[in-house]
Image (cartoon, rainbow, N blue to C red; front, top):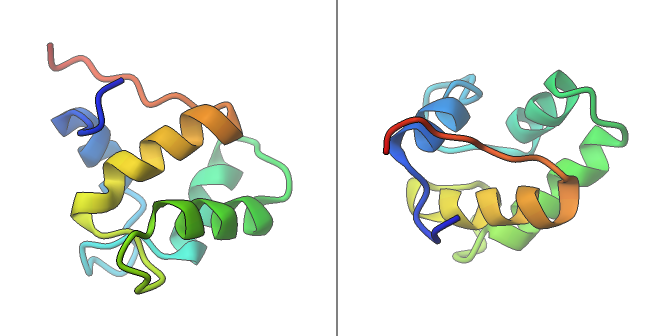
Length: 85
């Protein structure tokens, strides 16, 4: 997967932007993990945000989504599959 996720990857992740601020918080990421049947969702969400949040504002901004996709792939066993080829 490239460093920059596809439009479909971004669109899928943005579905979990519950407050519509354009960013993914720890709680919003926790809901993603839970929706996929993941265990220890709060712990995994905190790890995901910490790993992907390069500007240290404690949320995943649009330009950090690629980092989050890579983290999910490597550490959570999740894959974001796109169909926009």
